[in-house]
Amino acid sequence: MSRIRSAVSAATAPDRRAFLAAAGAVTLSAGIGLALRSGSDAPAAAAAEERTVALSSRRAPAAPLAPYTRGTTLGSVAAPRGGTGYRRLGDGPAWQRVVRGDLAAPRAGRADRRTALASFVQFTDLHLVDVQHPLRYEYLRSRTVSAWRPQEALSVAAAVSLVERVNALRGAPVTGTPLHFVMTTGDNTDNNSRTELDWFLTVMSGGRVTPNSGDPRHYEGVQDSGLKLYWQPDAALRDADKQLGFPRIEGFLDAAIREVNSPGLNLPWYSTVGNHDALPGGCYAPGDSLFAEFAVGGRKLMTLDEAVGEAIWDNVQQGGDPRGVDFRAMLKSQARSMRSVTPDERRAPFTPREYLEAHLDPAHTGPGPAGHGYTRANVDEGTQYYAFRIADDVIGISLDSTDPGGHYEGSLGTAQLKWLDRTLGENEGAYAVVFSHHTSRTMRNLRTDPARPQESRHGGEEVLSVLGRHRNVLAWVNGHSHRNRITPHPYPTGGSFWEISTASHIDFPQLARVIELVDNEDGTVSLFTTAIESAAPYATDFTDLSQTGLAALYRELAFNAPGARTTLAGGPEDRNTELVLRKG
Image (tube, rainbow, N blue to C red):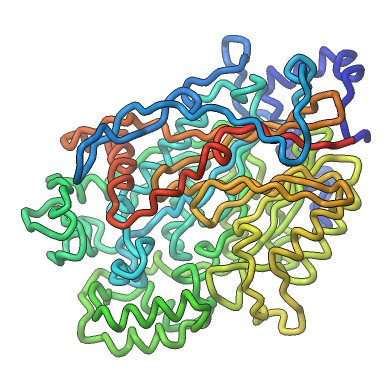
């Protein structure tokens, strides 16, 4: 198979192209990943799965596909209306596209020559949060903004709004070609909780979610605690956030735990695991029975002496306490300070095997593929990485960058790194896009995997070196940092590629990306990145507590979250771009 689809072959296959446009190009990606995974299911089963997926794929839009900007940040971006204190949002100026020639000079006339290779959407760091979970450490809010955010109770409604945005897209913004799939690059859940995993899978594949745990009748967590440390939306209490201008919204908490309906994506979708999916709190090694007991139990810590919290978090930031020994000791010491909540077995942590089984559950297949990249081979081998066919000339590779030894930074084990190298080599006739949760800069955690004590761990520099040895790599797409950043990686051998890191959907500006791959027919390839927001309106109404109104509030609350970083959107060169590569 040639690495680049030539203009001649494209011109001589008009019927095939017409079919792909009508079918949404689904069969190029859905289910074919099984053929690239060692130990995959039988070919007949894969074929049956592919037929099922094709039948449930999105229908072609009524009008011909064409380049567009509406519904993307090329059209408009949420921005504050002005003033100080709590600021309302409205229409802001669009982000223009920036052409980046760091790795190859863009050549004139390429827009008239280009051939589309593939296009897809990246979700990352959705952090669907069970805000009433007893193991959450909201009391560390003064040490880290990510410990508690005022918008978190609305994460499910907001994720549904993002699904609605993707369903409304008219193909790829630049080429107008059908989108192939959606890939989530980890931290789909927040606290390794079964409630959160079920909510995530239902949001993505379609169905009804009640984002509540514990008492089915009402919310019981930090936001009705009467503590000034947290925004108390329903109460008259002048808490710390209201002192900064946050509103009082009566009925907010009842609305936050009300049933939400997701249409599910109308594209196939694939899944990549992140540290918050695999580790309690996103940073502690799994398997401790005390963590499980607290997760399902009836006691919740909501306040903590600031000095104690400072010591706990500073130790974690420095890489200490990966197994949570100090954290467990702190919980035991604070037993008398805990508040009673309703126990709930559904909050139990899930194991890697349960994570895979949940993805393989037919109830969550949606538009497919079955398993969303994962197969029975992953279950049997105890792995969470795989490869799949995106298009004729493009493969995708999803990695598991979480270190089971603990801590929020990541790495790869030797077996996975060798598999990555081998998979790229065996598919050198196709371009490759690599997906992971962690970025190259946040893969510095080389702790041993307790299940594989003889295996070494490898950081970001070693992963970059492997990718740089293969000329077919176009991009490494990831998240974790909650910040837009696009980094060129030049290699003397010609194996240069782009690292595309995308902002989260939990922290403002709450983005996803459309990524398009095109052959410029001049020895270069371009990757177009286009940031998108959820479908929720920018303007909010504090009396509108509908599903859509809550999704709009999610964005505005996130913008106003005290202490939130203001650099997460990145610069213009990290947002809407054309990234040029020399490939032959």
